[in-house]
Image (tube, rainbow, N blue to C red; front, top):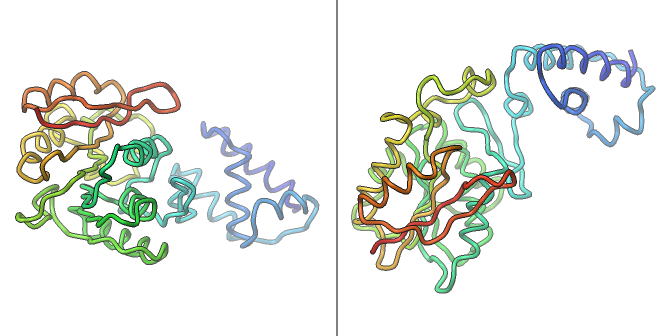
Length: 274
């Protein structure tokens, strides 16, 4: 079978399962199995291949395992991060949080905490883009924290990983100029997409109290953990913007800034006290 034939056949199977971008995904799977890149595939469409490994990868994708988990990596803010079932797959819309942090007016944050760091994509990106800052990373999942450590080594950057739930992971005597988080913000039963519902870690997806339990905790606990004039920078889920504003207003926070994602939805919010 040629490269072209395999991709066309795999793409038909993926499309039949309801997977979009089927040709791109088929090419990604074959490239990984052959240990080549997609440019090589495009340049060698008539190359004969014998690769049972590609069939194994295809079977996993047909079972709706996320492509990022099969490939073992995902790009975020122009860098490649290791991912696996123990961490949430980084999304492009989360890059808006990095842009908001980089646009903060002087003085730039010197001590940053990332709550629920997962793969470490936020903490590591901020550490790379703001090398003057000291970045702490917290996660309740030991597997996620180990992935973040490996990603930090991969990108040759220092972060301070701590195990625990939100602020409980961090020393009580440390105050932060910026706390950033993409917390769980989904209520049980809200997800239909099998790649997310059946594969991504529930700890990183679901929050109690109609999906806003983590927001309420952060709003209550953050005042004692921020330095004077410190800020919170949070991702908000689709349709939760107004609800999150009310939660933080009740705890004495005001909205200092918000950013929309590429679809025009409010995605990143910056809160300050007073």
